[in-house]
Length: 206
Picture 1: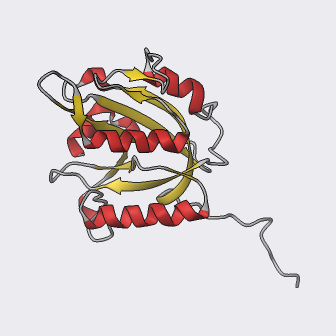
Picture 2: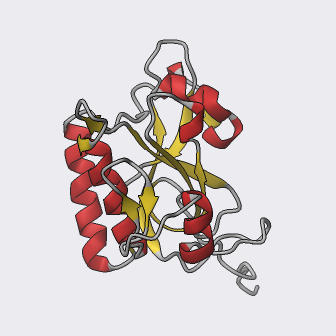
């Protein structure tokens, strides 16, 4: 009797952990919150997936009595993201968006979307990811709240060296409590839902 063999093999694809992805959209939501000088919602599409995940670059500037920027951790996160995608824009001392030559940027989201993102037809699965990101199911801060799928804001160009670099970053952020994710020990107490279906209510769990 002849051996039975399937017509093909199905490769298992994981959509959690460090994955290749593309950036398909950036939305500026800073106008929605008085405390957010920067609120860039970065939409990512992983290789092999038709479902997007959001990574938020959010924070406020430290300012002096004259309203000039003096610091703020958001600057490091923002410029790290811009460096990853090859963007030379930023903010001036007044917090206004401009290019590195001083030319004003009226809409930072449009500027980024037009120049640095991968176009997506909204149907085909993601492929040939240019970046590496960390995708996980975030623990809710409040008991009884839902867990949801998110992406961390730290991205790197996709290569073997950056794979190890991102792993080290993630391990450090977990050790400091900056990344809190659902584990096998607590999955029975929470329900996973997609962050892109929650809208702004998802911020209650961050």
